[in-house]
Length: 227
Image 1 (cartoon, rainbow, N blue to C red):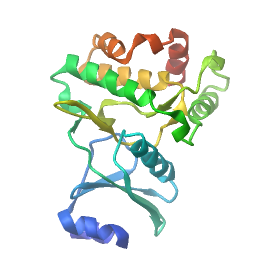
Image 2: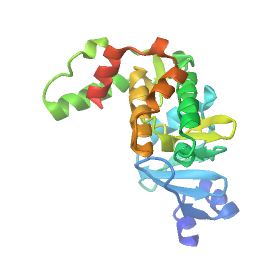
Image 3: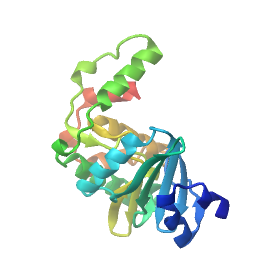
Image 4: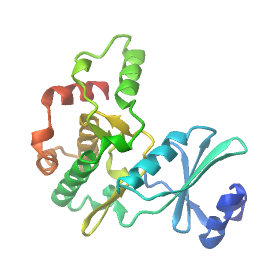
């Protein structure tokens, strides 16, 4: 525990002293994550968490996550700190699948109803298309159908969405987010429910809660192909 705290930059050491530190594996972040009292600290290569820090500020501004506590590059590594959300991640509610599907659908729709002008990061579609072309050596068919109509989480899987008994409390692991086509989040949410619940029979409840008025099968097919 003490050795871990000494590896932190000076600005973050008080957090470790206030509650000790321990490894954390709740979300799906590729960075190293530690719990320091009431805070989570991500650690990654220099520059790797800049996007996450910017999106943490965006999601805080739109009421979808906690404010960014601290971000800096120190001794060749990035450090990002944010206060823990209330509640538990979606994977802790698998024993209530109908409730979970409904609350997840409502949470994703609430995110997608926020003002896209508040997010300056607008390259989600382009990043997905570039990766597809790199891996498949051809353009993605139907890509012209994609819109930039919402602020996305970008990795909208159950470990990254938190709930308490009353419903949604916030998102974590925001580094894949930005403005893009809503169907990326719809794809990942349904994929994650199927993966963690072992069935896709709750996807209909999720889509009902999200609102089928906003779902376009053609754009969903493109986002599914890209992912």
